[in-house]
Length: 213
Image (cartoon, rainbow, N blue to C red; front, side, top):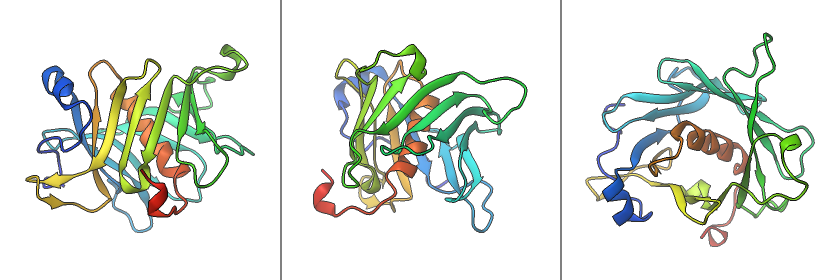
């Protein structure tokens, strides 16, 4: 694990602005930190190689997912919307499986088109009851997640985060299971990481490379 944490950013997202404002650079490893046979998850490291986020011990057959911090504290619970043509997922604060209280819905996330070839995703903050009938998305994600090349755009048209293939010493390209996540200052890294986890589920179908820009 100590050999895959970030060295320096290899993404192209607004390099001059990001360098001056010191963005948060994370390394995402598509591997559960539990390392049990048959598990499927994420281990996310900061620039010093410390575990920042994790999604442990889930399989493709389960419903919801829990994004945790490095020590295992539940940050966000992510649940698929039943019978959604656009593969919608909803995000809730903390451990959304707790029976003590009803957790607050923080966002919903879905594909813009129901077509399987579409990779464009829209994110709406808050719950449905707090939105107008035809709102514009708060975040928009485009590119090709399967090839680890996509950007997350804010409502004002600014790039707030980007993922890209990770390089070692600017020459060696690591596998697609290890990639860089750059988050612009002023935006929640745990929220952006929640988007990444959901994208891994929504963008699971193979698409011809020509469709990935």
